[in-house]
Amino acid sequence: MKQKIISGYNVCRNLGEILNEFAGRKIMLVCDSAFKYLNLKEVIDRLPNIIINFDGFKPNPDYYDVCKGVEIFRGCGCDSVIALGGGSAIDVAKCIKLFSVLSPQKNYLEQNFVESNVPLMAIPTTAGTGSESTKFAVVYFNEKKFSVESASILPDIVILDHSLLNTLPLYQKKCTLLDALCHGIESWWSVNSTDESIEYSRLAVTEIMRCKDGYFNGISAAAERILLAANYAGRAINITKTTAAHAMSYKLTSLCAIPHGHAVAVCIPQLWKFMYRNTGKCVDGRGADYLTGIFKDIANALGEDSVENGIEKFEKILESLLITAPSVSKNDLQVLASSVNAQRLQNNPVKLSEEDLLNLYKKILKEI
Image (cartoon, rainbow, N blue to C red; front, side, top):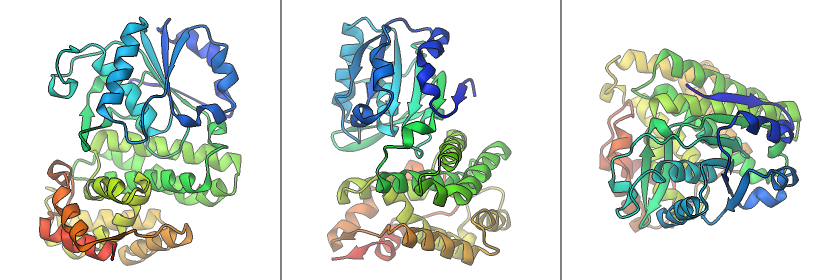
C-alpha cells in the first residue's frame, strides 16, 4: 500500500507541519457534522491552505451531494482534499477526488474511472470503517447503493489520532467497532483472502477483543489500539472485499434506519451458523476442510476453542452491547432477500440462494 500513516495522541495538533509534506496548496476540507465538536477545529481554522469546508452531505452519501462537492472543488480552484470524519466523509472526499477529473456532462458513475492525481489525506474520527485505507467508496444514486472502486482513491496520507474519538457517543462507538470486527471476520473467510489479508484480519479481531472493554470505558491506550485495529480491518477488506453479511446489511440499514455497523453485526451469527452447517456448498477453491479451519481460527481469535463457541461468543458480544435485531414486516423480509447484491455474494465462501437469504433474514430479524 502506497500510504504514509501517521499515528499518535493529538498528532493532529501538528497538522500544519504535516501539510508541508502534502502537495496541495488550495485544499478542500470534507468534514461531517462532528467537526464542530472536535478539539481540532481551532487548528484547522488557522491553516491558510484550507480554503473551503464542505459538509453538505448525509450519513449515507447521495450522488447529487457529491456532485455539489465536485462543483465547489472546481469552482474554488482546489487542488487537493482532506477528509475529516467517519466513513461517509472519507467516501465523499474519495469521490470528489475521482470525479473531479471526469466530465461533468455525464453521470460520473457511468464513466470509466481514470487516474486522479489530486492529493488526498484522510483523518478518521471513528474507529470502524477503515475507509482511510481502502480503494472503495460508497455512494447512493436514486436510493440504490453504488460501490466505487479505483486504486486512485486510496488516500496518500492517513492520520490516526485517537484523541478524535473522545467525543463519540457510546452507541456510535459500539456500532463502528462492530463494523471493524465484521470487516476482520468477513475478510478472513472471504474467497479472496491471502496470507497478507488474513494476518491483517487476525490482528484486527485479536486487538478488538483485547481492547474493546477499555475503549468503551474511555481508556486512551485502548482507543489507540482499536483505531489501529479498524485500520488493519480496512487493509484486509481492501484486499478481499466484504461478503454476505455486508451484502445483507445495506438495505437493512436504510429500511430500519439503523447504523451500518449495527446492521452488519446482527447478520453475522446466523450467516456463520449457516455456512458452518453447509460447508458442502463451499465455493472457495481451497475446499471445505480449509474453510472449516478458517472458521476455527476466527473462533480462536474471539477467545474460543470451537466454531460453535465462537458463534455463541459473537452473540454474547451483541447482547452485552445491547445490540438487538430490528423488527420488520413479512413483506420487508422478501424485499430484503431480493435486494442483496449478487456481486458481493461472489466473495462469500458458501453459496447462498435467494431462498437461503430469506430464511436467514427470518432467523435474524423480529417479524411484526
